Image 1 (cartoon, rainbow, N blue to C red):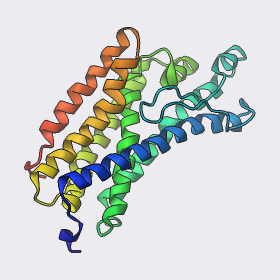
Image 2 (image 1 turned 90 degrees about the vertical axis):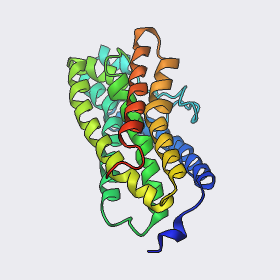
Image 3 (image 1 turned 60 degrees about the vertical axis):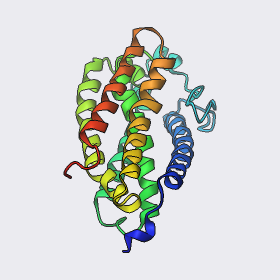
Length: 245
């Protein structure tokens, strides 16, 4: 493949990347809520999988799956509540795992725009996992809060086990997927390389997780958003362009 044919200036690809991200983010947030509602419907806890509450696809606020968890707890359907609450995190994890596997393989090596689509799809899904596992594991509400209450498990189980798997996935992503994106679209342009690194780290650790948690989570839970600031700083430092791959 003639890589030069796929290289472009920093600004054009930045615009394309941002538009792609927000388009995929809107799709993923809808998929997340429909995963809840569809599982609830399959388990007989919801009359229709279509009854979700629509929110803002850009700020990710106002969304709800429309599942009656309080009724389920009152009726003793705790296993159903646990499955319904947790199933989108399984979905996000599968997308991240399969996406990283594809980007590390040879299937997309000669298909730059297919690689581009998979890359930003993984960014959106890993962003969701960062928000839930690192910043909401100890919340008494939301997907993991419902799972913890329904199973009676300590939130430390989700936080520790989830953090280990998430850290491994992030290492593979930044160590292998990001350099391949740069090879396809930045080549030796350090401005493009830095731009893509900073944009990727910002979206994963701050946009959909750290900043959102600090702005919208009440009580002391907002401080978990600071994990995003630390993770962003670490990612930009450890995986900065020019380091040995």
